Length: 206
Image 1 (cartoon, helix red, strand yellow):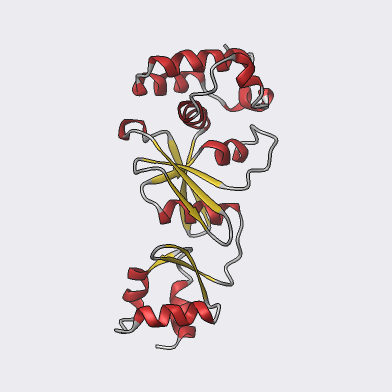
Image 2 (cartoon, rainbow, N blue to C red; image 1 turned 45 degrees about the vertical axis):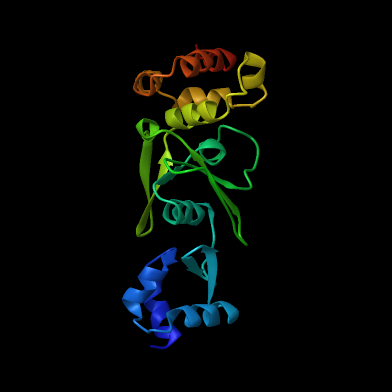
């Protein structure tokens, strides 16, 4: 099968694996063809076993979809989600995610994908957002805050939290304190609870 035919079928994917390609093209010399397609700039390697079409138009939501796919299970959170909800002023150069697997980095030509590990019981609090024909997972506002504080234990004082420059008005409009407390109860971490209370005081939401 010619690549132009394969490409049409691959367009239904944002990021595709070797197994996805095998379902389309059963050639025995697939690995050699993969190298050829990369040399000809038909496809680009994102991480081991995962590729995108070279002419794929990249935007934030495409990157979120890629992040979900190349390291499962995972969902977008931390700095990327804080930026997504307009809670921090900085532009985030990487895609940051939470996973139940080991902490991992994938440094690609396009961007750095960062995955931070949490316990299985803390892998919740994300929502599904539809983008065209696909859906990606991203932490809701409450879980974004908890993930960030949990994975940055060096942030302890109200001054530390103020230095994050969280947009207070935007946070107050979006956060659901009842949901936040339910999440904290599910996680069951007393130290995190104490730090969350200090964080809320720092943004005048205690």
